[in-house]
Length: 158
Length: 169
Image 1 (cartoon, rainbow over the protein chains, first blue to last red):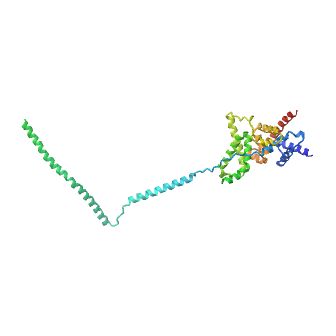
Image 2 (image 1 turned 30 degrees about the vertical axis):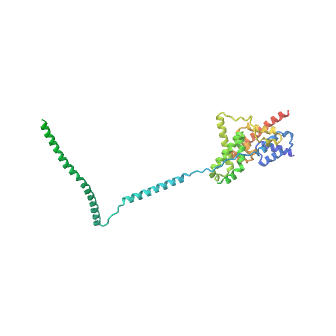
Image 3 (image 1 turned 90 degrees about the vertical axis):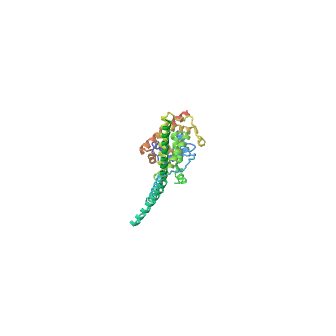
C-alpha cells in the first residue's frame, strides 16, 4: 500500500508535479535504512539532496561601511566660499571708494583750497632746491673764461 | 542600515547563495569568492535593499547571473574548470551517510546537466523553493521550470539506474 503510494509519488515527481510536501515524504522514505529493491537507485539521489542542504558558507565577509563624501556637500561648501569671497571683496572695495562727501559747497571749496595750498607748498619746497641749478649756471659762465684763455695761449704759441 | 541589520537580512539565505554558486561553479573556493562578491554588492547597495520586495529572490537571481557570467568568461578564455580531480573538503558530512560512493555519483551526474537544469534541481530539490519563486528567480515561465525539473530528475534517475545495475551485475 505504502509502496504503491511511493511509486505514484515518484512518477509525479519525475514529471515535476509533486508539491514540496510530497517531495519531503519521498525524502523521508528514502532516508530509511531499507527501501524496496527496485527503487534502490533513488536512494542516493534523495540522500544527496538532504546532505547538500546542510552545506554552509563559512567564509567571513569584510563589511566595511564605505564613507562616501557626498558631492552635494562639496558644492554647498564651494558656494559658501564663493559667497564669502564676494562679500568681503565688495566690502573692502566700498571702503576704498568711500572718501566722504560734503553737503555744503562752501566747505567743499575750503577743503579744495586747503588741499591745493598743501600741494603748491610742497611744490615750492621742491623748486627751492632746484634754485641751486642757477649757481651751476654762473659757475659754467666762469668756466667760459678758460676758453678765452686757451684762445690766447694758442695765439701766443703761433 | 547598520551591519547587524544587514546581517539579519542576509544570514538566512547566504548559504543558499553559496550552494547555488557552488552548483554552478563547482569549485568550493570559487563559490566562496562569488558569495563574498554578492554579499558585498548587497552591502554596497544596502540603501536600495529596503525597496526590494524579496531580497532573497533578488539575491538568488544575482547569484545566477554572476555565476553564469563567470562561466561565460571562463569559456571565452578557454579555461575550463577541471573538476575530475576536484575533492570536496566537506566529505566528512557525506561520509556519515551510507552509500557514499553512489551519493558522489549523483553529484557527478548533476555536474554534467545543462546549467538551467542544474539550477532548477538546486533550487527545488535542495533549497525547496516554490515553483513560482524559481520561475521568478531564473526569469523563466512556470511551465518551463517544470519541464526543466522533470528532465533533470529523469536524467538523474536514468543515469543512476545505469550505474546501479552496472554495479549489481
